[in-house]
Image (tube, rainbow, N blue to C red; front, side):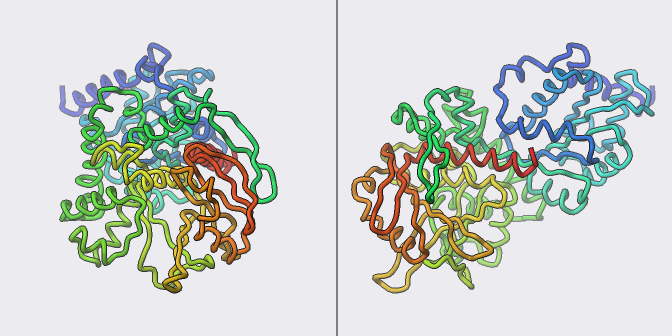
Length: 487
């Protein structure tokens, strides 16, 4: 038997193993037992969309559940009557598939099923970890153009590379779908604590809007702290073994692979220790204001490399830079200071240690957790306000929503992990200054447990427990993403 024939026989055997539904008509029990991510309800209609000839690219950080979502997609297709043998899953990172084109794998799968190579039947073909194939984007674009009755779905963990290649080669042929770490809204859903939440209406900018409140705020806060430490990744949420040492799982399986393998291979980084040092420093101080000067001194990275490294870490969905405006919502012409947030607060826990409610860093991590609910939302023009006009005229507001067209703030939120300002709202001097200078009549301040609307001389302040606020923002982010796809 020739080598090529032997290799094809081995590949066909592997494809049969990876697609058990060809025989059993269902995905493995391991995946069936997992609670689907809420993003599946947005992703799945895009999978079923045949009217527009596009491949669907599922991208996101490592270990956020992309492969699980592909398997849940397979089960939904079967449940809706799609023949199981018309659904093909191929994990491109499998060593036996090394350097084999996507079209060859597709045709070998059809051969494994006993189907003709020229076949007009509709198929769903899922390529997992597609970044391991060189020139995957060229391969995939060709498949989309060639096979009109096939829906191609590709996923990958090297998010920075996927985004880069998708933009370069997939224009008009690829639809990108970003799967972020778990939002707090999803975390509560997966942990089955939805019964702790009540939907309410609150006054906001002169109208009633939907919000949420906790039936047991102490338990809800306990879950929120747990989310900050462990809640970004489904496997950590469900596995007691991983929770005992989340650093081993997240640091080695997520952070190290991105910092030591993905980013260096994509961008040609030679000093990975330098990049690791920078990320470690940022993670420890997530939510703090940085400058290139201070970052360079603290991390030992030259200033001319800092901007590139920060761009790379953003492209890998590990961090997000939040830009600064002044007290009149104007951006600074020469930006020297900015804030950097982890896209998922549990990254900090993995690198260092779990944080407790009373720890000094809790305020910054609460703020990081709140920003983590906003970050996946495309088109959210959020900044923070910081000004120092004189020794007596300086201040900061944690989150402000800017109307880009008008260059004016539309709303402001102060993120607090204390009830102190609920009882002494006039101590919110920076927020008061910001509201007065920008004619804002309403603002929101988060608390630990208190809630309610207070009418003050300078405007109305809506107080909301920060865990409830994070839950609501996460819920709204999911709805916003759904709306962005016209669903």
